[in-house]
Structures are given as C-alpha cells and as structure tokens.
Image 1 (cartoon, one colour):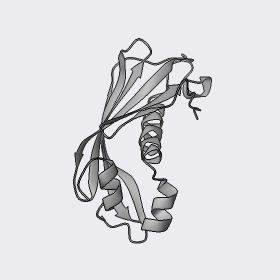
Image 2: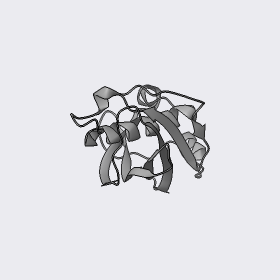
Image 3: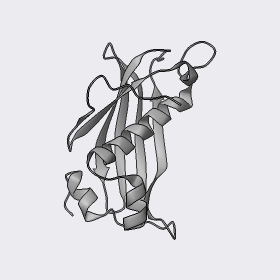
Image 4: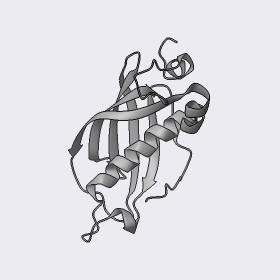
Amino acid sequence: MATESRPGKPRANVQEFQWPVRVYYEDTDAAGVVYHSNYLKFMERARTEWLRALGFSQQRLREEEGILFVVTDMTVSFQRPARFDDQLDVTTRIHNMNAASLIFSQAIINAAGKPVCAADVTVACLDAAGMKPRRIPAAVRKEFGHDG
C-alpha cells in the first residue's frame, strides 16, 4: 500500500482536486512498474481525500447520515507506466452529478506532466443499512457545487 508524500498541501476547489502520490517498491511488479490495480487504489484515495478536504469523512457520513459511496462502474485507460519512486498527481473532477450518483473523471499524471492512467468512475450513494440508492445529502451536493 502506498503512503502519500505531500510536498505541499493537496490542491482543491469545487471543480478539481489533486492528490500527490509517491510510488513505493510495494506498489510495483518485478519489473519495477506500478501494478495495474494500484492505480485504482491511488484514485480511490484521491476521491476520499477530496471528500475529507471538503469536510466530510466517509466514516462520519456512514455514522451520521447513514450513507455509503460505492463504485458501480469504471472505465480505465492505461497510457504509460509509472515506476518505483515516481512522484504522481491524481486529479479528480466531477463529470456529472445526479440525485444519487456521481461520475468522476480522474487522471494520474507523472512529474513530467504526461498522462499515466485515466478513468471515468461512477459512484452511487447508498443507504448503509439497506444498500439501496439514496439521494446524495444536500450538504455534500453544495460542497461539490450543486444545488442541495
């Protein structure tokens, strides 16, 4: 599991969030290239940290609002390899928001500014108890720049 190194604070606003990630040996395969599933972990962390930067802990949302966010669909494009010790930035944007789901556009960029991996990720808001779709809370919608 990678531990994020933070050369500065992550950059966040309503439109976009960037989360820095350093590639560690444990993130790579025998050739020293990031193993494909680890890019998805980097993206998950960026979405979680964006929520946190906006003031929402996923644990608190579950306990206080009774909701979970779960990935329901993902399209991934691997463009070039990242390697051991690379510094990467994971950029996250909301492409679309509906009553009970969001589509994120995410990209992983290397230090040279070249794309490494990109994904469109659909995330549904579910009732934690019944695992049924539920409207995204007004406070979360507002922070993401949508009407409550």
